[in-house]
Image 1: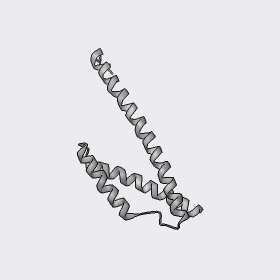
Image 2: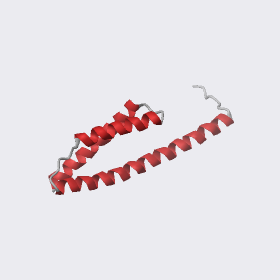
Image 3: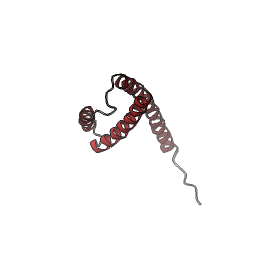
Image 4: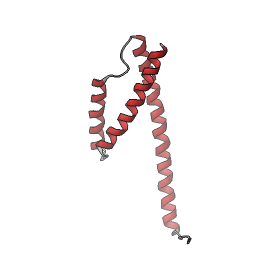
Length: 102
């Protein structure tokens, strides 16, 4: 197996970009944590008032809104929708758990 020597300037640029990616990943995780703190509060409010864990109308609005934001940001709207779908499924699971324990 041969080792490829990477030009130091290329290595420096890779390191700079990877540091930025790591910082963005950390920000995404922290933003998701904050989002889930809010949705947990929503779950408790829904349970307290006997509201269903899922809100299909709200979810559809959120998907449309996120697709539009993605398009404006030059991000694949289908990817953004899949990501939000995954998040919504997790939120509903949390809400169902909260409702069961209420």
